[in-house]
Length: 163
Image 1: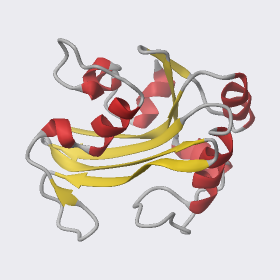
Image 2: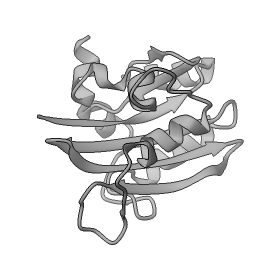
Image 3: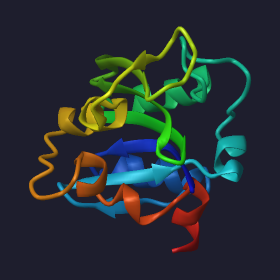
């Protein structure tokens, strides 16, 4: 079974909610005083997602990165993305605070053959988990930070809109 997720993780702010509404996105409240703005296909088109990739990212355009950078002026924000099938896949993440990159880009994979991705054996070292720890997420009794914030509740980005 596969999964995919892409979106912004942030502290809930008025600016973040206003921006999400303006692009037709939803804001999903998460534990640890966090929120997710998932990037559905429609939202990505509205926000100007395109072929202009931000750095080495597979799925983050420079336009979306600029939105994230601006929104981080009010509160820290991270872009997270992952795709997997049968437990194997890749993840990427970057975070901004005060308009500057504060969580350096991370690219991890279980077996993805691409020079951009670091192969990791421990799920706890995956890029999304690292980004969530940057926000102070403690996995506690959960398997990992991904599960602790509830990202395992939906199999795809589109599923967040069906909830």
